[in-house]
Image 1: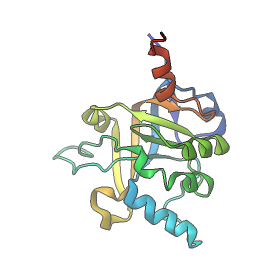
Image 2: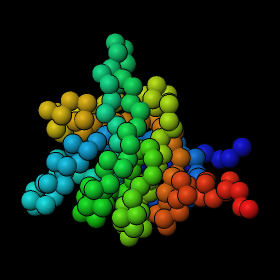
Image 3: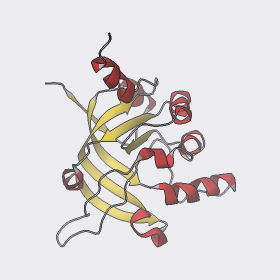
Image 4: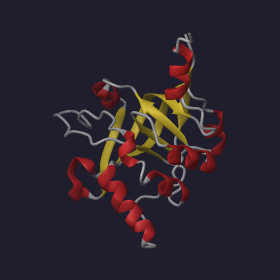
Length: 187
């Protein structure tokens, strides 16, 4: 059984460098939700020289659009969305927004991986099919920007032991590639 690395946000460069592709991680602290509609608005703000509504310096963004909370719950189901939808915006969010971590599902483009290496950023894969489990790790949830986007508004989540896996580390080691190579049959 492998060890689960417990980390706390905001992320430091040292913590990011210590995370390796394939590591199981438990995140506690603040993370922000943002999907493609929010990312488009954020990058437009950066291009216009405007201040962002959230300081993403050393923060983690989770590509999710949570459902409304049921009575007695902090948040509804909040599974990950496909990360490739944010690839056009992610390099700018790392380079100029200060982002240190991203959580989602699926592979990332070469441009995103290169930006991750250049900016010491880590990409986590959320555990697929575990939206209810993930919701249980959310202790607080508040809309902090772009309320007009509904489920795609930016939310500030306080999480405790949010489970995920390092999919791509800050050196560009990519679990989506390494995992396939490990099981590839060579004739």
